Length: 363
Image 1 (tube, rainbow, N blue to C red):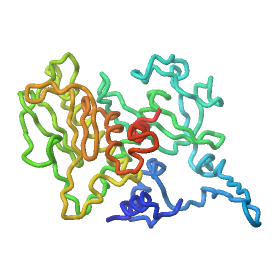
Image 2 (image 1 turned 180 degrees about the horizontal axis):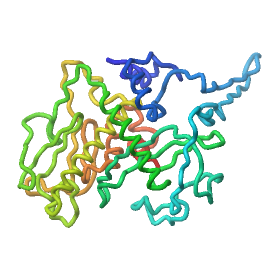
Image 3 (image 1 turned 135 degrees about the horizontal axis):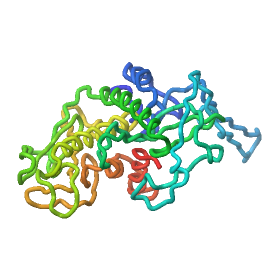
Image 4 (image 1 turned 90 degrees about the horizontal axis):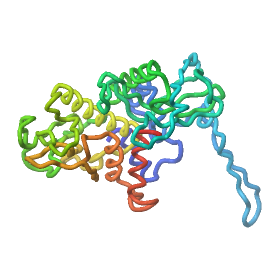
C-alpha cells in the first residue's frame, strides 16, 4: 500500500485528523511539481502556512458555555495571497453573459454566472490556480474533432477571491491555452497512477470470467477494447435504431476510430483525476492474491450480436453501461460503486452519484 492509499483509507475511516497527512510519497512530490494545476483537487493535504486556522472562543466556567468558531473568511481558502507570477489577461466570451437559457441540453447556449465585479467587462486579469473537471484537446462529442474541450478553471480574482469558470466562459484562444496546459499536466497524472503489485485483468461487462470476444468491427457480434484501467464491451455493428453511434459509423470509420480512442482516453483521465483527488480506487482494498479487474463499461448505442443495445444508463461497483461511453454518464454511474456509508443515506445513492457529475463537469 502506498502513501496515497494509506491517506485515503485512513481518511475514510476517520483515523486522520482534519488537515493532517501521513506523509507525502516521492510520487506525490513529483506530481506537485509537474502537475501543480491539479494540486487543489486533493481531498486533503499537508498543513500549509498560507492557510489560516479556525479560531475557537469559549468562556471558562461551570456548566454550559457557548462556543464561537470563527471559520470564515479563511485565508488561503476563501481569499488567496497573490502569486509571484504576473496575472494573465482573460477575454470573456460575449455570449456567455448574454445567452438565454434554452435548457440543459446545450451548455453553450446557457448564460454563465459572473461575479458582479466582472459583469459588463470584456477582459480582466487573474491568476490561474487550477483545473476542475476533465478536458481534451480534441472534442469527441461535437461535430468538430479539432475543437478543444476545455476543462473548467479556478482563477484568483484581483480582490483575492477564487472562482470557478466553466467551459464557454472565455475566448477560443483562452480555451486553447487552458486545454494545452491540461493535456500536459493530465498526462503526468495518467503516467503516475498507482500500479504497484497490481495486474489489472480485462473482463467482460456481463461476466468477469471467461474469454473475451474479439469480433472484427463492422461485422455482427461483440468485441472488447481495453485500456490501462478500463475494458469496453462494444457491439461490433453500428445501431439501426435511428440514433447515432460515435463508436461505429459506416460513413466515417476514421472519425469513429478517433472518437473511440478519445472517449477511452477520457475514461483514463477520470481514473487519474479521482485517484489524485483522494478516492480509494476499485479493488485497492482486496488482498494481493485476489484478482483486480479493469472497470467494465458496456457501450450502449451499438448493435451487439444483432441486437440494438438501447441508450439508458446503469452503474455499480466495478462497471456500468451507458450510451456512447459518455463521460457525463460515467461520472454519475461511477458514484454508485464508491464504497461509502452515504449510498443509502444523505438523500440516497443518486445524491452521491450526482456529486460525481459535478466533479467531472462543473456547472
